[in-house]
Image: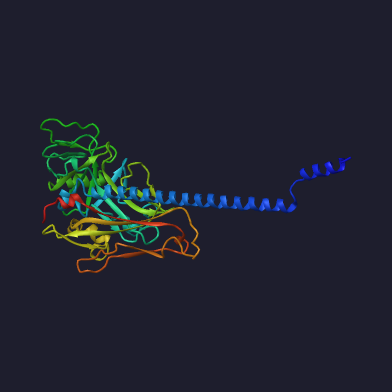
Length: 400
């Protein structure tokens, strides 16, 4: 009988894997898993990098759009009054009966160093564009102030008659095109202050009407200064825009905490004395003035916001402010994703970026500036966005 032999063959055919075979199979499986996992991790890392770079690109485009739109309209509404007491006047604004400008405190973060703090903030004066060099939160980045209204509001100053101007009522040659809630500046040549005013909500223009009542949110009596200026017969009312349509722009722009571009409404249109976050990913901002010859209107040179174009000089010298016809802005953006150096220990960003490369003064002096990165910052991808914005309202002014 062959039963034992058949049983042995059956057992041989039913035998499982040996320990060596099992270990080889596990090893192969682990290698395959490792390869797949590495591929997935690499793919996910590339995806995160691509997403961060795309986000940075979108932030740069949006930041450039916001700054371009604001700066391009600088001076709208009041450039025609530049020599009628507007340029260089100390801006006096009241909101809800309380004075908000001139300030008695420094501007809120990240603008606390703008104009040097509380003392300088109290002397803020009107100019279409102002650049506070290295007055940002980090002590290196610039702060840009933009002031303007709606050019469609008229942009033509109107003389205020000395007779008929009483209390909160001004007498003009005519009130054509003025409407309830219009915002305007009252200025006088030789007078330091200019008053930010609002037309009364109940005003309605009619034929041969010469009286303009002031009131509502931004009515500013300024301790009798309005009546004194109006009674002099040498004051002007310059329409800016309308409070309802929110087309008057008096803003600060600067880089703050968490690599964010902030803005601050000098008029506190939202009712708060706080800066508002605008664009993420911005870590640095610098700007230059483009100036023209005020006698010929021809472009003269690019200059830094220092020396004869330092912010305090621009604010107090109308002809200097009048000569600024363009602004060149450089923004440095950064991703929010730290990346490891490559196999050669090379980091993803260089030690420094050069801004305004190739830009020189009229004398050929380079205006380039470096933005230096710390060792940690070099683990993040960066991008530099530069653009030039003409001040169309200044360019339209006749030469002096």
